[in-house]
Image (cartoon, rainbow, N blue to C red; front, side, top):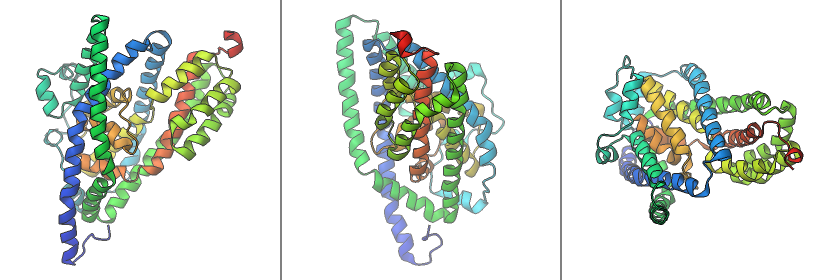
Length: 399
């Protein structure tokens, strides 16, 4: 930001030298999206079938995951645009941010009056050419194809299913190796992209990033609070009792920013504080830690509303639905790479919505503070799901 408007020619030389570094890293990141998301999604579906976790209680848990994530999306759509609209944008800041990012032509071509019908949107989910979809930005149809292909694979002979699963896992492991290589230089890539955009926008970039932190943290805190009455109503448990049971796990989540580190406290709170049955503490809670991230629709939509507002880009219901659907589908894969942050996890969803990835990376640079609120929200959602699925059952009653 200090380089903004600098007259020293060395400042321009520095920006010019750093710019290709960020672009190379960004291209490498985009290169890994397709193989990573396909292999992870394919293995996730086959593994669920192999372990039987889609049946019975696991199926109910997944439906509840989707329901709460849709509720989080509706909550964000109702509030976030009002908050984001208060962020003032000026022509200079918008032009500077645009200069540091490549806005996809698919998004540039959308007009404010474009409203995709439900039928047209559903038709668009089916790719007519899977190769073309993989080579372009049609991520959501690619995810749909992968899920259908994986479900079809579960119907083949057991020996062939085992072969497909082993091949899928091997390809997923190979994709993850490539991703880890890229993650090793992530700080350099993020720095390069952030430097170019911040130097162009000056302190306007600080306002852009600060608005994202404020809006996303407020909405995640508000939805965390909203989970208390939802759990009390659907889970048939007093709100104060639920609050006491989940509080230790929330403290671990806030300090460690790790849902996995919060699992022991979640299990203890569910077992001793809420008296949930063994199925909830031994199966549902580990499943929620692995597959349920209720924060993702909130943070993804805040990014969407903020970027389209600041960049002056049009926003249609079709883009919103595409982003939410992609986020929910991606949330069930294991795309969370240590050090990768939310940008890596949700990159397929952002590509599906046509957002300039450079702006996403710039916001990722200040994701440390929202990450605390994310983890607390996710842990609260994990306990909420376990409580609702138990619906008043206790460990004593189960015994």
